[in-house]
Length: 334
Ligand code: TYM
Image (cartoon, rainbow, N blue to C red):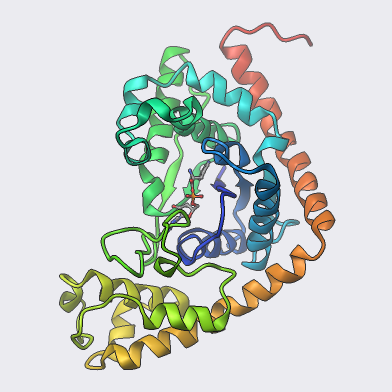
């Protein structure tokens, strides 16, 4: 039975990359009538230091971003990870299945740990096993993510396969990463070789979901590009990562193909294209940030929504956790 699971870290400003690569698609999957479970992964967020008050606010803000992007908490299950203890428990079980060598090969670990792996938390190293736990505790079959998470979903498949092999079972289904559309890797506005990221020190490198119209317009106006006009064909974008990024962003926001965007803007310069892109982005994002603001005015209501979601999540996760423990030989009182 198809079931979608995905998550977002509530660790700061959500970006246009999170919106196009994840949130917008989460709402679409829900509207296709597939069972959808979406999680604010607060346990993942604390693998690097989070101020407790900030974490609470960011978690509520991320919940508001889901809802404002069209995720309906009555049709999807929406909750924060730490309220469903099965995630942490399954995380431990899978820590004992996953191999250190697998973790060492994760490019996100290598990027984050850099030269100072010794100083990182143990949780940051084990991060992908907890992500596997998120997915496998629901027997999810599909995981919509941006391109940067593909390796983690593939690792989840490896962990599921090793568990099934070691315990001679077919208990865990192998989840498919869903990496669809033209905005699976939205790039920085300052450097076309880097992904747009909430942790980039330069705020000008990203559009935040909470940016106002003037800020959005200014960031697009100042986005680094080459001086040439836009080409008429996609091949003309091949060696032009910054231009390609802006065309892809336009296409994703407008639900058009990049070819169609070039059909409209081919032969025109950035002096024309950037303001059009800014107008489009403002038209699409302003209703979202307005709705986020409205929701954030009632934090208690957000907390209620999350705990209702957590109860529904628990009802799915707990029996799967229990069966996993049983398969592994843990005595269960009945
Ligand atoms: P996170 O919080 O870094 O990002 C959330 C989602 O946004 C996507 N994304 C992007 N997509 C396109 N362009 C970008 N520039 C961009 N930046 C981020 C990410 O690919 C992701 O889909 N480990 C995950 C959270 C997680 C999870 C899970 C995801 C925990 N457990 C289980 C799926 C299933 C993360 O850190 O995402």
